[in-house]
Length: 304
Length: 309
Image 1 (cartoon, chains in turn red, green):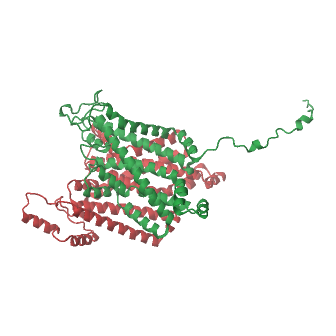
Image 2: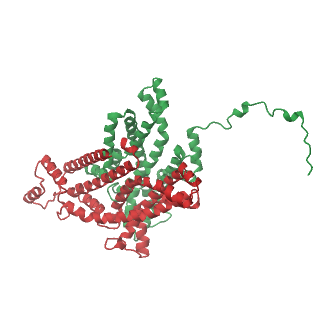
């Protein structure tokens, strides 16, 4: 097991190294400079270049950047008041994290209920309703759902604030918009997993030896069908993060997604690099956690 | 109660029928895998509807723009924000462009992305996975590391990196899908091929003198076809979604071209007073995603032997 984790960690660092290197050289290979402003005199441009170390050879810049990144310093932004990128990210990440985690909690509970109910009442009205909700939840994207909520709940009925992030009330609509996808994924997964477990011989045995319905479902079926839920962890994280980039735009929330899109729009390379590294690390860690959890559950994985 | 004596006559002891061969007769015609799958697919009304709607959307996307006399790009400032009418079925946008033509133009982009994702899945994903699974050993190790690295990079980041080199637009999205869109297909096919290559029929083929290429193309891949279709049906909606997200945040299709994602974004900007600009593209996009998901569900139930009841 330890060997497995160690091997995965090595791969993780190789992946990160590749991503950072590729991103770095691509951003350097771009035509023009971040300071291509006609109003700048050659002297002030030189000062700026020296300040950001852009006057040095590419290899030196690369080595310096890699050393910096290893120390957790992602450089200074070219745009957002020249602040350190690490600082901006640390400031905005909690906002995204709050909305994301709240969305997972909001989605997980109804998702579990729908999935379990659908499986226990297979091929009934409950099953069809839950399946319909799940398919609709996957099909209607969050960037369609969010404007609908803004229009009706926020604008027409005035129940919740439409945008910005000043209070908890502001976080409800963004979280719900993200949570619908979670409900769909979890309900779908729990349903099919439970149906499979319900057909197993040990469930028949449990029924045959006279256990009550509650005991069969609670002790045997639920436990065995919920453990593999870790396999949906990664799709969930990917979905929430991708979704949050859009949702943060729609609700004008100062999170990482907004920072990412803004930095691309203003060609702020330091921030693009920084957020890219941040996202990649986050994704790779989620990957790692999922695979390790999976290896704990299913020992066959470790061999492969 | 009187018990009547039953008359036992010799006729009662004669054999009923002499044609025992009849018992061995197979009642119906033999049904192959695909016939069987089709029959099970047909039973699933929701996926059948999904299939019909997809075909209808494809036909409409190509035929409908020919039926109205507008170009998706022609601007006419005097005819902006016209609202829904017989003349403009989905109204006009800020610049007086007919939304009906633009929505179907956007639909064609989504369909192109669907086709492209399927193409990369088949042309890169399937061979990559099959070779990796069949050869095994060091080759497999290297190929798996490549996939792991590609998988570690978030899709959005890939799109951004490609965009830094090329300009945003349909080419960028295509390249991004080509770089990493096929990895899940490769992984699934690899697993399947590894499982099949140790089975008896492969051994039989090999002992009859079949080479690796023949085993792969004649035995392993045909046996993975169901799985390939299922995986394709999962790739397609997520690729369509990916393009829409990129276009929605302004990193995908650029003006004056339209995709459903960018139209939804445009409509969103006008939500307060001209909400129809959002509803139409959003409804069409949701319908497309819904049909693909329904179709995928039905195909999985029909083609996956484990789903059989």
